[in-house]
Length: 404
Image (cartoon, rainbow, N blue to C red; front, side, top):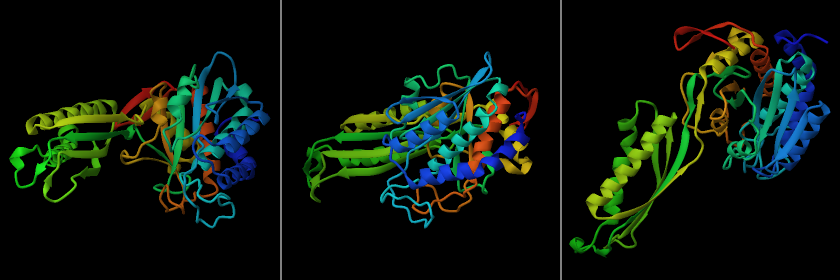
């Protein structure tokens, strides 16, 4: 048996490329929506079992696979999301979706096939791994998210680190992009009900104008991001309802919107400022308010040491030209941050090789992306478990010695 290293991984990627490609095409052509990924989960379990990797099904469609290497080592987790989107595909691909109104338009077919490819490579070298690998196949990422629910089921118990990835049209095909620190935004939603007292529009003094109060709230809330943080921060009021006729001063108004923040401190500060601002304006205008403020995904803040590890693994596998540092964070969201709240790790990108945007009916990553991502996952696991150290790495312009 060949000793596992980056050269081994490259060779085995070549040997397994047709198999990984078939897996990706099979998954792509049979997309399933969140919490209904039964065929996909069956395929995953069957494939992992064929590699002598034990599996466990939770939440109906979530799959947890465990590969045991040498005893006494660390445990690393890798995650892929499985669910599709309610879109009708118009890519024209030979392996296009066979289901009208369902499509893998966010690359989850690539993520799943890549993780299966990594499992194939790593399972062939389990006796050389200084620890264990846990493969997490998550349902419903596009919906309310499966990460938090999988964590409640114990999927990260004993895990020392966790890694994941996402395809992106913003990078060349197969190129790895890493981001230190704040990467994806936390996602929160709000609804405000403003109650005043309706009156004839000609005698405003007899009523309390809920619409005017709501407009003042919108103006003040939109100014909050610049007052709270120097980081990028977004507050959007996307819906406003009030009034029934042009000559009636409204006694009721309703607002709905979203807030996106980077990092837990800014998230907490925005929430506090939001409530304070709304209540101060309500008191000033004589209205009363009911506030619904809902937390969604926590955002992604990558661990610097784990990001350095991933950057080095990518360079070892693909060369320095195969990896780059991403310019800045995104205000989109991803529930992988739930895993990072439980264990140190990092989330990296890989170029999809197509210009079409995510969540479009024409989005179709290159065939080779799943193959390359599978190799990247395997290289990350190898570097983490087999303790290649010390690693000298540049982080934020400062040289640091990191014990990996």
